[in-house]
Length: 251
Image 1: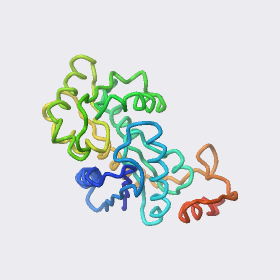
Image 2: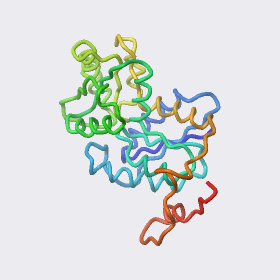
Image 3: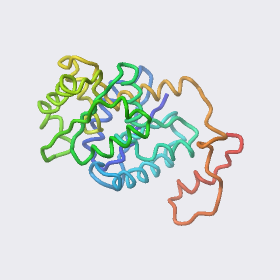
């Protein structure tokens, strides 16, 4: 099984964190590869930045989907996954959906711990879009400026751990979701000190992707995730144009 994780941010240091946690989570025999967005922002924090990240992820997915069994969009907020599911014949998993599904299997109410205040409104919208707004206990976040996105864990581990404990003690969370690729692996390192299950988006996404590949389900041929109709286009990267031109009548 070959799983491709796409970092829609341009930070290679974050890709290193993603790859390390993905390899720890993957089953024996699963091949993991990670690609970093060739354009965009250092880390996605807003809705507009998510649009940029979605396009960056789409270009990489179009170029490399034929060599992999599943794709993980490795940014919280899942930039572009619904569109990728329309056009790709392999499973596409996002960190948010995967973490939310894991959390729902472990408890009733969950809290999200995030890297900044600005990101929280968008995260709340993502939870609502997944139909889980009534199970969200809280979103807690760092307030300090981020000096280096690849060193958030080293710079703020104590504060992040305190936010997790506050979510449990003050907000009634049954499960903690550690949000965002820059925090990949943190759940594994602090889980013994948190009195409820702690979920990581990267490891959840890898495990869910493995499950979907193993289930062997076929891609949609009808419904809202049916492939886009073939139509004229202009100015697209060759890989995306080629993907859109595929005949999927027998998909």
